[in-house]
Amino acid sequence: MSGLRTIGIDRRGNDLYRACVTCDAGRPEVLALDRFDRGELHESRHLDGEKLVLSVPDSQVLVKRLRLSEHDGPDIRERCRFELAQSVLEPENMFQFDLLAANDDHCRLGLIYRRERLENLLPEYHLEGEPAGVEYLIRAAALGRGYLSFCRQIPGELVALVDFTDDLASICFVHHKRLVELTHLVLGGADLSSESSLKRIAVELRTVVNFKLASFADRGTNLPLAGLVLNGSQVDERVQAIFVEYFPVGVSTPEIHLGFIGDTVDLKGVSPENYLVALGLTVN
Image 1 (cartoon, rainbow, N blue to C red):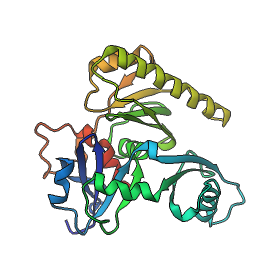
Image 2: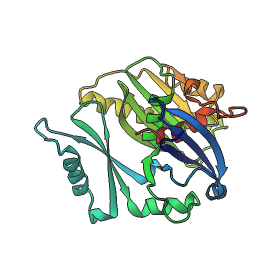
Image 3: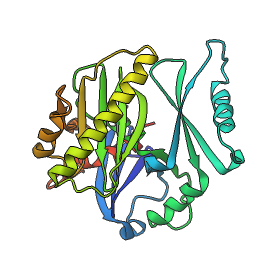
Image 4: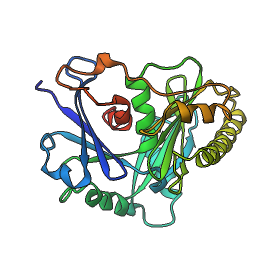
């Protein structure tokens, strides 16, 4: 394949999950799914000359919902950037701003990254210097993009996605195939093998979900949650059974459509769903 390949790298604890994707054929094709210890990445191949996107922990990104006027002209991006810059108290050159489309043409999700924190991510990925063209994306957004682009989707208009790492749960709400809200839950080193810890997390997650549903209703989207999708290496039937007590609407796990997986990928002993965030990083 001669076209540009995009590499998404997601850090989950001490492991780095890497997905390499191309769109040469007009649809995404996964060329590689690899897992590394953090210290091994700089020794691996397929980084030079490729587009590289790293996940950013949700706790390090400020998410702001921007409502645009119908009279805003074609310079919407500059208008949104101005509003984001006005919302920070320090010089704007200390921050990096990004925008995501929300549930209608007059809404955007503004992302505010502190540049110093982005620079500090590189040593965590054991990358020397700053690779040319490196980009960054909050994990919750990558989770949503990965789900919408690579997974079989559950029925319903409003779905909550949750991806568990060691210390945080990334949360993304999807409405009509668009990301409408990003948030997270601090796990505080909770042991997902413990039933009491799982119940505590389920209660906290239900509180977050109910709060977001109320805010959606205030904005005119008065819909029930259609389903909860849980992802993470420790999410199994036992975990789902506990969470369904608090989310009787239904709890499932994501299922990546294997039609996107190229012939070069060896899936023996590999769960593609563990790479869902890494895959989402490759989506424009």
